[in-house]
Image 1: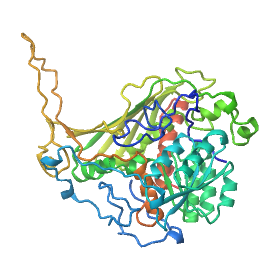
Image 2 (image 1 turned 60 degrees about the vertical axis):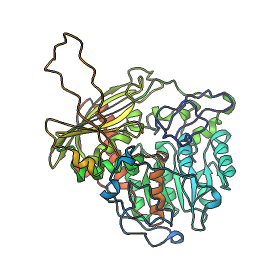
Image 3 (image 1 turned 90 degrees about the vertical axis):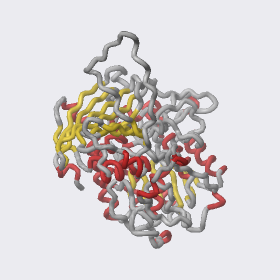
Length: 524
């Protein structure tokens, strides 16, 4: 009973506007979805106590603490000791002026060991393809089944790709048939279906004894998200939610080393974030490729148009603020180690037709957080009519500013020269890379200095790069937890906190009023 997270164009005529999944894929890696040709953006913790793992996979932990966050060491690889990287590992000499780099070597199916993790992909659209491509870089992962209702394209394409890669698999339309026929042949399931199916799929898989990796948003319903948390606890099954930045080494480094250890930004005072993307029309396909109406209706869709563009429909998805904003608002909570006290939001369907775009095409939200150091206000916007500025998060303190993005081209720290101490020690310790002095142009003859102007602050680069596919570290973390070698970076409880934080934005827009959060809102 699977449905695609998003749907790529059909060969040979690419008539579906792309639903992209990654921006600025690092150099040296293949695109996540080979058949998408115009992708320009992603589609898209505090550690929880690890849960029991399958007896077949139970093995002694390499060490009792989480795996090294920054080295790119893989907990799935028995040849790596998983020791954490200390500050000395970050010392940057002249020979390392370009910073630390983490790479990934594709792993062929022939190198899988006997203790492989046996996996099913539930939802084989573009997002499912992204997860699949990342998994094919990870050793000891074997796909056994694919489930998707679009048999003419998604299911056939992914099943064939896996077979060509050495992963013999069975293809299914109904997830219940898959769970029944594959009983005893699976250890874990990757769920990349539309949000309104997440709870039913995840709960059924956990009740079947499988560990679950579920794409965000955890659910489009908080009641269903709660049931997912409760089922994970009741069954003892792992449930990782796909907020992949929580396993990204750049974000982990900034959270642990810069913000909490070095306190580089001083007292945090404000946060800005955005995800702007260019206008795009609804996805369409030739009629000959359409799913039969009775199949669409059985799985919750009124039409093929709704199936292809489910994110825009109430009851199916949550609109751009949930689909896009969820990734970044999750980081607000994480970096502050706090939950918001309230949110005010303005938004509307200002550009597209409300007959087709039931959710808002423009949303601007302001959260306020109470932290031990004082109040922090966080602004976030998502636009779907102009892509200027792309997507990023900016964390501002009284001594410095961190600008970061999943996009590899963004990652700077700015020193507030009026208030911050000298940062030479941070450069010496390898926490920052020395700013490059840019030549200043001579002022025009007769120019007069305007004392209201402020010189740009020194810009320091991060010493950590991430050259794996964007979702790969988060999947590695999941498979490491399946083996009992590490803890989940985004377990169900954290995913639920983010779902509460994000879904309440739509409520605030609807109400045209501030929505207050209570501490118990975040608890299950």
